[in-house]
Length: 287
Image 1 (cartoon, one colour):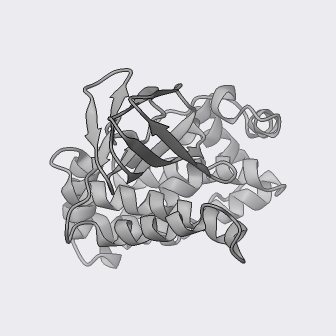
Image 2 (image 1 turned 30 degrees about the horizontal axis):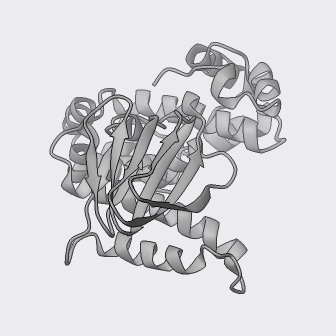
């Protein structure tokens, strides 16, 4: 998988949800802080988004807005009728990837001719599936919502004027190294093998990767293997020995030590906590 897909998959819990919100005559709707990400797409009319912490954002027809950190906010209707597609993605914030961590609290993606074509297409498809009465809508809708999240993040990265990760994935050497690590994290990677894979010298790879990502390539790989372990502990019944083989550790003991160093708890306790539904509260990983 690629970095963006892996970052989303590691955090995602269950299926996203969505609904239509209709407001008229200056109506206001309060949305409380949420343990995940929220989004709105204006289908008709216009409104203002008033975040609990930040400046108001004016939204017109076709505009999309992503609140990647679940920021509480108010939607204030402009005079007339407004219809908004609202949705939420449940995320486990104990495993947030730095790419997603650096997203701003509010990502405004205004509609404009010729802009964000993939995002616009996903919005159009979603609008046609919302009543869930068409054949296959129950399958199409959650997949379209996942697609919408990917396109919103892509659109932000294409236009971002700040933040490390748009630069990371725009650098051919670092991006190629990340693709290799994420495509096969269990491989017996060394800095020499990774440098050969991306066709640069070892010092060049180490310098560029560390400068842009904020940690050396092998340290990033160790961190990502532990994050994958957390996902597998949550989503599968595999033994720790089996998981160790899947993420590139020679023994469950070595993996357990690395996991405890990152998450502050043992893999067994982590699995019990997440099984009780305490994903976001039971532990707090360090990224």
